[in-house]
Image (cartoon, rainbow, N blue to C red; front, side, top):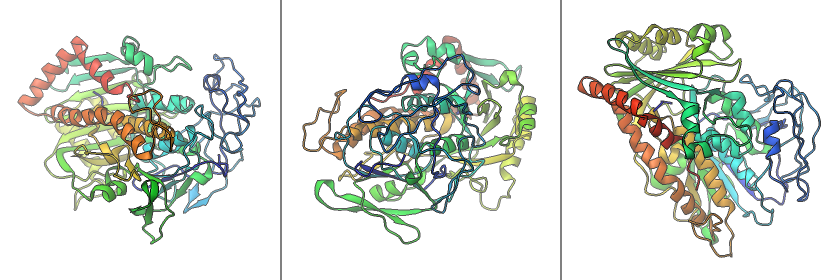
Length: 576
């Protein structure tokens, strides 16, 4: 329970529009250098004119930094795969593969060029792909992954809009990926996850008071491999490694944006609203921008724009989320600050997530980032009746209460650590954190539906199932939404019969029917996690009798192995 290629002109068009979260910049060239394992599993018939791609297996034991990796170029949507020996450097959190960006809608020049590229796509002929113009609002993890998934399934004209003019460094903290990592693997992006993640090896939970009794000690790799469902979905077939690790949000956004062609990203465009446009076959919808502009009509607009979603507002109107009474202060050490990272936490604990339970306070200490790019994180969860903002943009300047100073979050973090007698190793991480984010946990009620009646608007990620972070599933569920909605849309066959939503080879006669199938798959697990997270948050920050019962219960659950089963229940992806 941790907190934890430019499209060919004849191809269908998809637009991804951003509103609530910072995205990676638009770049003109992409250096597509998949790992040897990823290359081996590339689907056939994805390159050239339908001929199987020629794959170049490389020795799996060769270190990534020294391996001759495939440098591939895809012309158009299904262009020829061209390979050449190349000593490619892995992605780095400092933007190792990212050498340019979009600033106010203009493409920045890279410091070194590389051909436009894309990953291998799912098997389907271009004639089968639905001819749709799709807009997805939001350039956070959900929106960017949705754009990549749409392209993977052949809907290749994807443009991401976001209100921020460029990808911002030092954005947000870290989060754990498990089911979300499985989606990245399916999209052929395993090398990104492997490069950016800090593998989670263990979760240790202890009580603050008394002798700091250990409540649970969970071996994550063993847990995954001993469970049939987890072993089938959270172990990568390509390299045999577990799919469970912690990434820095900013690093992941950069890497995902770098996988999209320049034409797919347009930053610095704030969406003010969405308007349905009546017409035959479901009509469409248009975007209204904050600068007064109006977009062309799109067949479908997918809102991946988070808790302040403009698409959801267009569908259901405004509403106020309910403050939970829990305030979380996140902190993380500086990007590239190797000294602080080394001093804050011993290397032997980098793969461990530590939970500390106090009387009215719960603290989590964890490490994110790839090799040589570690950043340590702390989350201090406090039972606090004073309302704190949700801080949807993960801003260091938001989330505070009216009248508080710029260092309020840091002060609150250190004060809580002292007040609740957190151990010295927790204080050591907090004292070395460079930035802090104050977040008020608010409850969002499950929605009756995730799409409008026309089938011209739909929701994904936090826009439809924002959940408290106590089960560590927000990003994971969003990435699963991205895969599922793209796969369902790829099966739209206008004018042909439908295979039904329960069929593995289902074909949908309309976009609306595909959206209903997507919702039928994704709504049950996300609703369950939304509601379970509320209970977990209340228990983990409980004081008095609640805290005492929690400690006894967690110790029993840990000993019986139930805590591990709860983790897996939420971590195993639900995509069908």
